[in-house]
Image 1 (cartoon, rainbow, N blue to C red):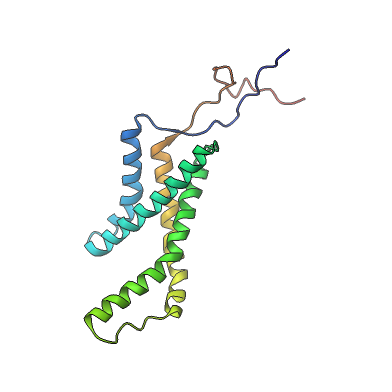
Image 2: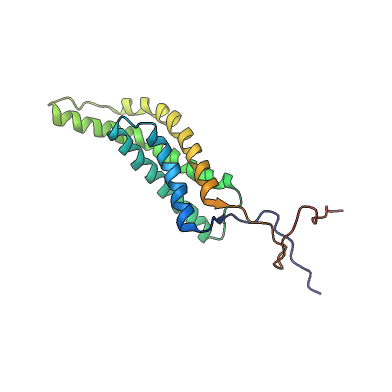
Length: 170
């Protein structure tokens, strides 16, 4: 005799419907709030938007890869961890990229001024981590709450399982 399937306690997250409205709204909030802090400096605001968009592009690629492998995120925490991992990579790369860019600008403006060293990049790394990871945490949480929603648990036969229906193991 075939037994009924075991109910799924925590079903995977779903995109909030309609996805073409809520996903861009979540991305706009997550990418826009750090840029809004620098309303007086257009260059820095543009740099923040570019870096935040790159972080979310990388995070969405890893999320879609996990969905494609059949490991859909079950909690918003998982989505936030994907964004944090992408933010960590961006924060670790940023000092090395920025010092090279500053060196190129300095060399263009004045001969011999491009003596930025590896030590300068390494000295900037803790600052980049201290600033980048909290921003990635808040942005990931905003995106996860706006763009994704939880499903009700399903008993495997198309019926919703309520917390009062689940019996403890005896």
